[in-house]
Length: 311
Image 1: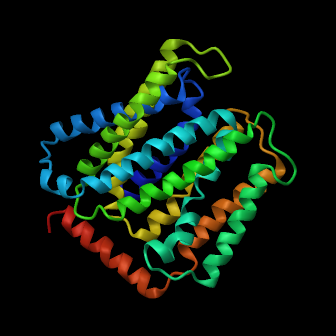
Image 2: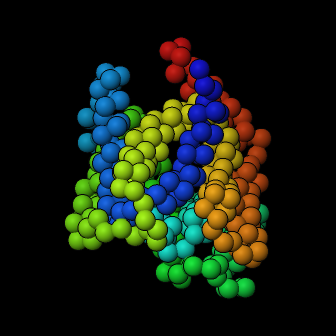
Image 3: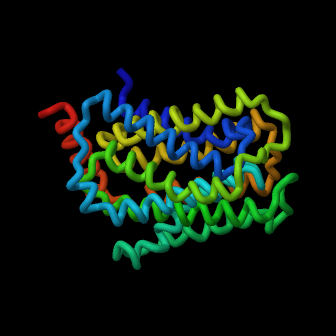
């Protein structure tokens, strides 16, 4: 039986490897994200059926406007991020996508009425320096990088922040229920894009159609459907602090796999910028915490474990 920590680590490694798997999918970005949403939703629906899970229709109905907003952010996050993977490098796109925590820090006073501390302000400044380095403002872009990929990756970060913001208001909705609804709705928003663009290949090398289809199904079934189940199961019992720290495994895995396996170029400035963005986002989550925050997380984790065990 895997621990919650192990499940969450596997989840983050899975998310971080999506860019690597997509290198073997010879279909347009629009088709890929549509298939990911629909196959992921179908996988979760099968799990709901197999587990005889009772869907809370009342909770879904009362939170439907929020889930609609979140699903729109999810659809455009995937569109922008997957397009950025192919216009720039997996490493650059993933790191810029993880600007989302920094964006949330900046928006906190307006959205959540939270004060920006001096330490968090420093994190924001360091992150912007990192983004400048990754984007090629200093030292030039990495070989094969299209500036549009940089713009799309940053747009993906804004959508990522939107997903988090909307989901903060989905309290009381079962993880399986809200995940299925959001994935299904995201798929609906993506249908027009897939129809207009079509399945034209976008990868620079020839890929066997069977391999491409297998990779696409792997992304939908495993890296979306099954991984989402482990993700929500893990965060139900882990302290918020642990979730925040382990969450930054995803961009680290993306950077390493793109460089070591795909052989994608990463300039020295880009490498330094990646470290600054990931480090600033991590510090922004952990630096300004107080003992009261840690005690609250410990109490929340204990209560969640008691609930999960039927206590």
